[in-house]
Length: 130
Image 1 (tube, rainbow, N blue to C red):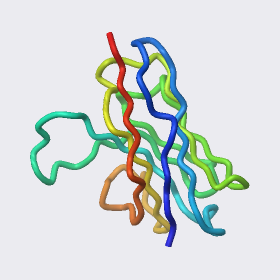
Image 2 (cartoon, one colour):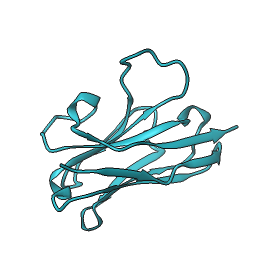
Image 3 (cartoon, helix red, strand yellow):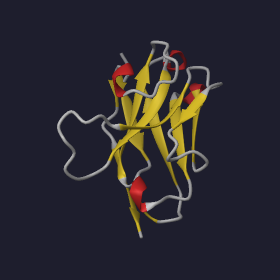
């Protein structure tokens, strides 16, 4: 069992930067692959999956990004601090969403699917103004 707590969200102007953090409980953080997903505000249909943003393997040696954030966002982790980060640069208004971190101990090829994760944080709001 692992508990995840996101922080670092807020309001930022387009072109600005934010760094999200996700702190995990427990002593086995280094065995979990971690991902960031987001859900935009508005009338999302029931059951619509959260949008994949980025993922990082348990060791940190492998990362994966959605095309929409490649070159702008960077995922990283510090296993000694039980924390995964999402550095977001050159933010756009379309990045506005609630951002969630997630954890899984199961191996997958790219960790891009919501259903591959076992544990989720409560989310942190990111709002990008024009």
